[in-house]
Amino acid sequence: MKKLTTKKLTYVGLFAALTFVSNYLQIPLVTPFGNTRFHLGNVFCLLSGIILGPLYGGLAAGIGPTLFDLFDPVYFTSAPTTFINKFAMAAVAGFVFNKRSNRESKANIVLASILGQLTYIVLYLAKTFIKNYYILNLTYEASMVELVQKAGVSFTNGIISVIFASIIAIPLLKAVKFE
Image (tube, rainbow, N blue to C red; front, side, top):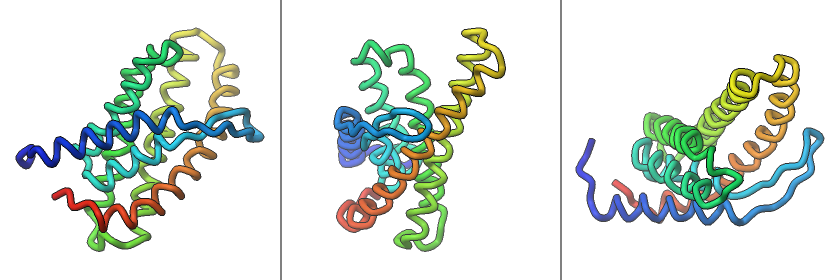
């Protein structure tokens, strides 16, 4: 790991703050799979990974949403898994983006965003299944019904997040010099 500088720490704090605040800016959505809300939190998690890299981007993406969960009694108990899921989302996006040869390629940005978002969706759905089936002791069928509903909503949010992150990343990569 390279030396942690004041500049790097500042960027981690900035992106953690952006992921935290963006969770409050919500747009309610009605989908065929159920009602959901779109917020820019996942967009900034993906951007954290792409701009800051896997480790620092993962930390920023994990810290902001986890703080959001800790300050809201509805989501308080989800905070630990939120940190893991959001960290993994940004880390995968950052890893994929940084390992590709043409870092400023739009296709590279889109691929990193898609793989980061898919990582989050898989982890989120796994958490939902484990909670429903093993902790709440719901039947397999009942667990799968909720899983299918949440998968549809998660993929809808994921597509929107990938589009926004891919568009915003292009000018940000030119403006922000992290390393």
